[in-house]
Length: 381
Image 1 (cartoon, rainbow, N blue to C red):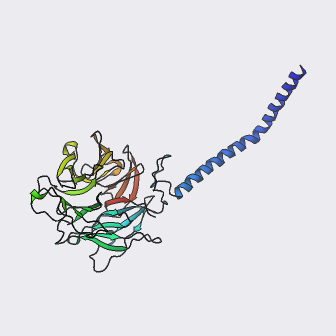
Image 2: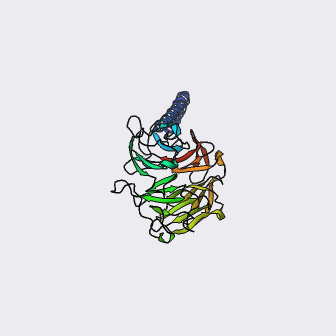
Image 3: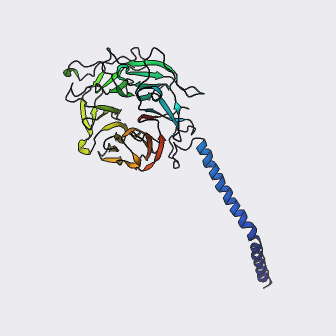
């Protein structure tokens, strides 16, 4: 009995002590919670300052792709905009928050025609930047070196390819792309062809390659022709815009006039099939790209004013970005980084963000000085 009484007294004493300590313990608990929340907020802020937020969009754990850990204020993107000459004939850098941080092309030699109507561009394997100056009488591909560590300016290195009598297929070129074979491919708006050229580092760098092997029956074609126009061949292109290489090695070409994505064999030049057509609702395809896993083909359409998605495995076609969503007006450029789809809204002079899988509008990423043409990711500081 004495033992039980002692236990009861002990329990009563502990309870009383607990009641006396409550006013002191609760504030400590709350303070600990506050400190943890503050530390988490500081961690998030530090992460953002360090560039672990992707282009203004917070990523879910494990959703960040390697190689994109640029500082938020560093150039994350390059964009070309519509403009014949002068201040708009430049490549503009955009940081991770969507701020335009200035032109990045250095001056070109006085003997060169001035830059005009900049369109497609490509970051080469050595870090140099190839840019398309598309003014009709002086169409050419110009190479600029790697960015200066202090200013970010890329110095002029060389004129890689020029139009003219020896290269009549390259006139008012829209897009350029280095193909799987190392050659440079170009879509040309005035000749409505795709032509190709010897890559840099080769003895004939910049010179047109021979006409594709399967096109002999269509007569004499311009040097370098790999896809002819519809006046040269019934298989040819009407009004060409962008193109991309598929995981199957074939060329997928935006034919604006025929409202289709025409697929051609880059070796023979011959038409293989069409993947998206007017029957699917496609109107004016402008630019096309495959997702990194090769599963989906994405196409901007500036008349239907949307982004189309073709699932390669099933053939299912849908509008990933619905017409006019988020204020989209005349869809143009297209790019994907991490889980975000970036689409140029030509008439509003903006780059818009969408969820790359669901197509949900995520906001305006950047306001531009003129209509967006091409938009490409940057991995260098």
